Figure 1 (cartoon, helix red, strand yellow):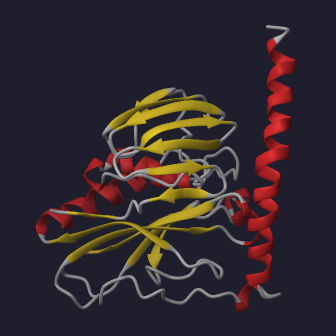
Figure 2: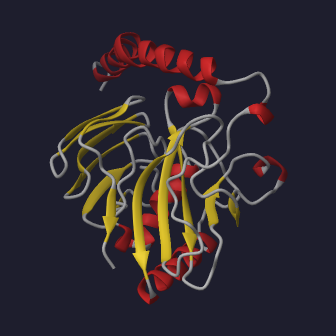
Amino acid sequence: MRFFKPFWRLSLVVFLLIYLIPVGIVVGARQLAQSPDSWWDMRRDSSQQAPDPSTRDAIVQVYAARAARWRGSFGVHTWIATKRSDENYYTRIEVIGYGTSYGRNAVRIRGGVPDGYWFNNKPDLLREVRGGASVDAMIDSIYAAADNYPYSHTYKVWPGPNSNTFMAYLGRAVPELKLELPSNAIGKDYLPTPSVLAATPSGQGVQLNFSGYGGLLLGWEAGVELNILGLTAGIDFNRPAIKLPAVGRLGFSDFKQIPM
């Protein structure tokens, strides 16, 4: 055990020097170059990926976009947008850390642009479900799970719980989404205490994790992922791709339309 501790620390230092820091600098420089001085000047308009809300279909979409400013160097922010069949507007469901230190609920359920740029960063559409009564029922399940989220007044950028922890929680509660979150969705592997073993967010695998600091995930949808200090790397065999910390997915897109 005494031998293992210095070896672990040395491995972490080497990893930071040869991978994470250079990648963070490159991605961070890109983030800063795209960011105007004022938060209010950053893009939050539509990325033109959501269907017209006047459609009679019920719709569920899951998005991921680089986090704002320096945080985007290492990870993404994820959210879900819903529209019931009898509605002509979208509702965004997500976790926002701002205000939690003052007692504000981190879970935000509100109207808004479903596919909006996230502080200048264009979102990627991860999942889309369209249909009738069955999708309406799915939306009801999503709302019920959001109401029962155990960390509604807690937010930590690393290793969680954060917005990605919330999305993974919704995925487990509504496995019909078959949700797989990007490897750079830091916090997605944070399991509700005291759990160390749980189904994957897609419901098609299993994961072992210790409070977001380390673990292993195996599943048909997500492939194999190793989590070390909140950073995830792995291989997707279903839709071939390599998953890297900070960088994300390299390979075939994981976007999926779920038939209902």
